[in-house]
Length: 377
Image (cartoon, rainbow, N blue to C red; front, side, top):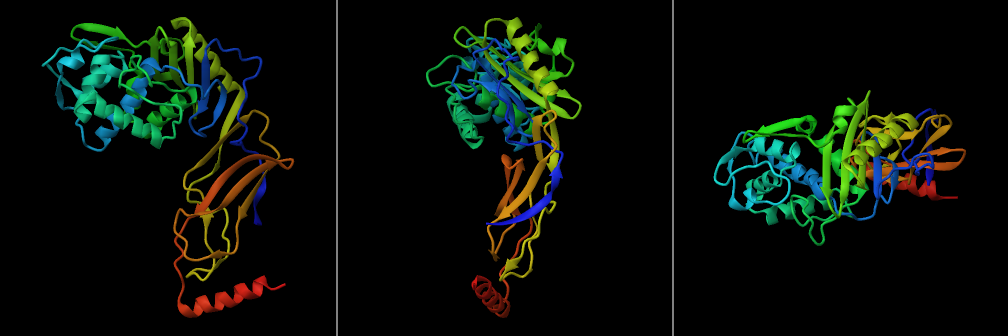
């Protein structure tokens, strides 16, 4: 393994410094997770991978699937939906839609997100997939694509059902995906109330009234699940997502979420290490149309570290050489390793930033000889 030094000591944050819950952070919940949206790191968690009943936090995935249908032009936000008898009679929290009466997709989205209406959710599921069951299959496929290993859905609403579960970490990742992939739809989560059928209902995320930096996301409650909350807060350029599951009251899910968010903003920093498509090295390539190949990252690299732990980081680009063409853009070319005092801090895959096709016969022959000579003692 040949090591190419990629840079000087970096005063930047690192992905691997995942925080363990400090003794000073008692959170009164069965499980919790705190995630930095830019870096994708979980900064703190307890029972983060344990499976719990998610209640109406389920609707985060329901929304993701509906947003996907809107993005892909499979559903028109201005289209009207004739609410089915089944949807109108959905148990639990309701928007109070009536069977056979048309409702626009946009209003149903507000009914699902702001009012947490199970009737609105089922109506949207039927509008996207024909039946709630077919919609749930899409939800589970999306969960698999996202790598949500501890999440499975049995319905679109979050009503208790066998095999219906999620973890705090999975819910944090899901919430971050909604924010990242649908920035045009995310403002729906900041709406504080919605009126339908002359009934005004307030958003149950009370934290938005107390902390102006909180602009979403979703509450949930059943007797078995307890009081749950996924909250998102943006302060400056940073955005955090907190998840608390199984608190004992509406007030507790709010106060414990605020503790988590305050902790994340105060105890950690997040900085950009690398920009996408900017070369961090140009290793030699044999038998290719180019003698070298630029390597870097497919996406911007953001990292989080506890405050005061940025100095002294060393970046080393490790590549398995020699490189022999062909190489395709995006193909893995090595690993960028961050260390401090010889201890591993983080690792990131490095990829080819350009195609390197195979060269002509003469060039390949010459490089074959060069490779043979290179291997000689």
